[in-house]
Length: 203
Image (tube, rainbow, N blue to C red):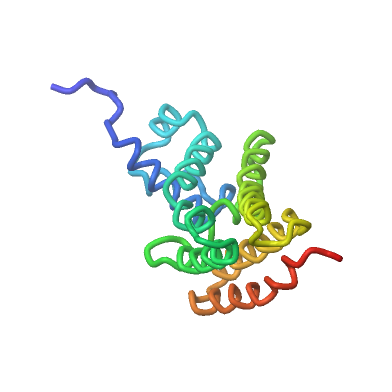
């Protein structure tokens, strides 16, 4: 005979995956405890016992997103043969991932800039740092290309990286508003048309 009142066992990893999708779709504030517990298949006491708080659950969901959803986008930055191919691959992969069937549109981390209202200072700082990582990674790729003689040595790597990350973040917002993969790919091609001018060092 089971113990009366004993919490029902659940798969924590599976519950976290489901919570990630709710937060990704609705954002932090709009995702109610009812939304979360219904999706996760647990009650509020189990949620608090396992994750501490709604914000604790959100932080873990963001970490899971970063670990499980971002490699496809970031991959071209290190795998592509040239810097231009790396940036184009980054944007094209973003277009594909942001419109993937069975997933909420857009990027959870990018969207957190506008839909993570209500989180504490520590979580806000974590999200800002995560969004800044893309600029850091692209700038590093550009500097490596410049050091190898592929690009002009005097280029402004930070400015170029910021430009392409801004394009990619805009693509995330467009995806949330219903843009299709071909529409996002057209945006990416438009951004790549500026490559030669952007990567030419100032005289």
